[in-house]
Length: 581
Image (cartoon, rainbow, N blue to C red; front, side, top):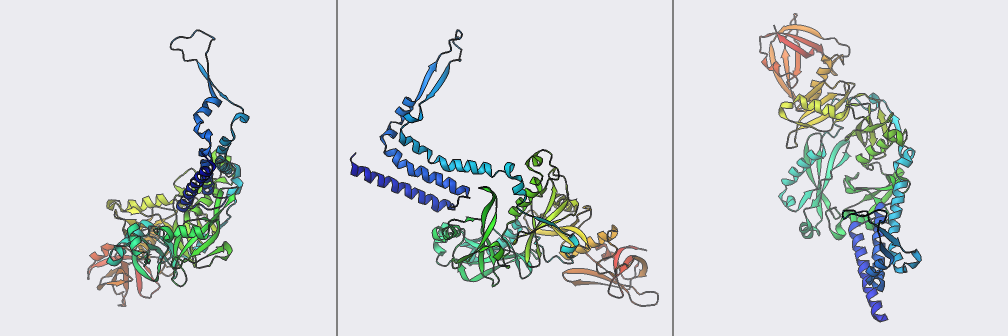
């Protein structure tokens, strides 16, 4: 082959290799960062593409078989130490490898793609927990806190997202399904984000294109809005934006959200974007940037935060100490639990985490959300590594700042509480959601929802953490709370109901019913029984129907004995128990 043809062939082959490398980068989007495992795999692939044209153009490549025969000599060595039978397979083979100096130089290029793989292996070993237990356990610091101080007593649950993501998807899809002009072209993203919106928890998710051809037909108009789900009231609404979203995960080519982020920040190790709303109600994506805290690849943690405007493509990057206060999620729940597990398991050393496991503790396998102040916090229980059915406490992690607090509250772990709640209505076959923790009447209490097979919330449940045989259920939060407070009173855990005068003892009153009325307030129905005292002064005795439906059996003129306590409203008593005379 003459020189000119060889140059042209080289140019063609290297152009193809460059095109393949570009397509790989365009699709895989690895960060150009030595702390990224993906970068080193990509570098190995590029190195292999780089040597392939040179290797193929050498005449030695065509004689690869001859090379093997010439330099890898298979020599038959008979075993003459004893007489061989026909079935004797004791003959051996010896592979003779020629000295390196005899191996021709083009084949040394095969070593180049191996260099990134060697770096990966060295980096992986040097980042392993077996060599860095102390470094992993020091990634976070945890402050022990007082439960009653940090968790205000709850009368109505307005600060906890009781709804899980699966239920949010069902309600969100149902809301979108009622909008015929939207549902035919778009779908709700399955990546719901938990946010604090105007002081209450909300779950939000942007719309996505419903496939390639829907993107082709609508890319000029963009994505029109998002769905907001209220996890307290189990409702959802579709919100249309004044300016449509251009960059989403379901976009293609230049409209792909992750591709736009990668081209804007080619060296950053990007986390999963989460959809949020800023202070002005504009749609944004919050993107954490990661960096290892141990060696080359170990203990990746958030180092910076990108705020991306999907409607315009503009973005800003912030250090952690400059992150705007309105952002709700910088650290995701999985990372928050993983970092605590490093501390809980490795504080005593790697060997102790495997063999002795003294003082080793881990988080339970899920987490919930709580709104405290202006921030979203993750909640999860902490148990011993022996996986028993009790917690030694629980942690709260600030989703924006990464602050950790540990509360030494001993009691049932979450799955035991879920089983207790399910057992309370076992005939219905409802499934409990992962609970959150609240302060109900001064008691650490699990609160959760009970869902049917379709994933819709049917009941609420409250389970006492320290005595999980105390279980209350109800169709509303208020009814459930009232039933739970009465159970606490009956068990002697509290002395009086929250709306009862403190220190007021219960009393037995026998009276003739003069009037009965059912009044609905705040979504709950109460029975008010009117019965005058000996002097003729009127008295009212009340109870919620959801707490005790048997009160509906009482009729005007009946004589009943009531166990009651005096409420803070004069002349009104709350019924604890009752029976006919």
